[in-house]
Amino acid sequence: MRIKKIAAKNLAEGKQLIKEKLGEDAVILSTRTVKDDKNNTEILEIVAAIDNKKEQTKELITSNSDSTYSRNSNNNDRLNSIVTQLTYPLLEYLDNNSHIIYKRLIDLGYDDNFAIGIIKELSRDIEDEIQLDEALNLIASKISHTNLLDKKLSQKIYSFIGPSGSGKTSTLLKFATIHKIIHSSKILIINANNYNFGDKEVLKAQAKSIEADYKSVDKIDDLNESLKKSKGYDLVLIDCDSEVKSLNKQIENILVLQTTLSSNYLKRCLNEYNYNYLALTFIDKHLTIQSTIDSILDSGKPLVFYSNGGNIPDDFEVFDQSVLMKFLVENVS
Image 1 (cartoon, one colour):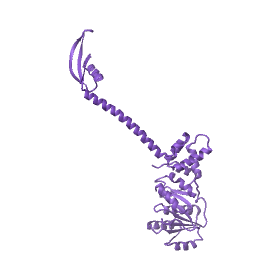
Image 2 (image 1 turned 90 degrees about the horizontal axis):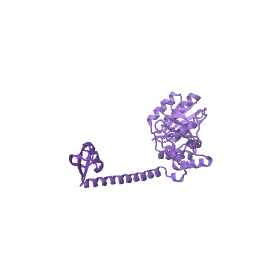
Image 3 (image 1 turned 60 degrees about the vertical axis):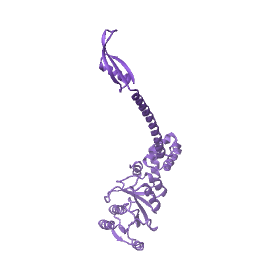
Image 4 (image 1 turned 45 degrees about the vertical axis):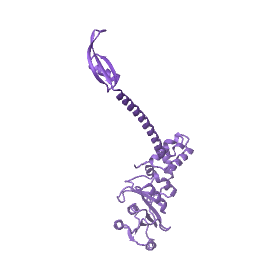
């Protein structure tokens, strides 16, 4: 035990002095009033003590706490470093100018190798610091897009293909309705989807509402026979089931993909289906094509239109440069 004698003007001052000299765990053993011969006044003499074991324990806890903080701090630094390496695996190969753009592109959802390719291409053309808008403009310029709604089409046959639930039927109906309203096109709608009977009835009723002719076929042979008799139509639109990956060469295939699907599944569809054009649906639910941009570019096929709701034909837009820029910067999380 360590004992200390304290002289103070009063008890409050004495407690404060004890706390400073011995610590908060010190205890007062005795107090008495004595005469201060120097000033000829009375002072309070306090005897206090602290248990050495308590003091040592406190020092040990403080020491361990500092050590733990230091250890935790080092662990956090190492953890942050690992997370950074996993999130931005190619960061160490870039100069400081490219770091920011690379991280922004990855944060937006772009693939590592794709982001690096964009940065390399910009580095060759731009001597100054690379800006994010320059990177996005370059990406947008690479994406092919076309408008199938701006003019009347003649004797064109389009099949709407894609996975189940992608919105093929509603996309076909929106496409047909717009051409009927704007161009007064003569349209034949063929149902070749024998899996979804609900959509079949919707398709039939909607075809009637826009004064389009309607047929339903069960087999490819029946479809071919119907196509032979379709010469008088401006547009023939075929609603296919999910098993149809493509139709014959005289038919242009529009692959309809919903953006709510995982990026891996979207990429698989882009590789599995044989298509001429790409349409995107459920934009109002989930907007992200960043992670599939490389696959879209590899396909070389143009984006034609996207659906952002269930209203026919209101929620239906064509792709242009401004729309593409919106797609490129949006990040869904």
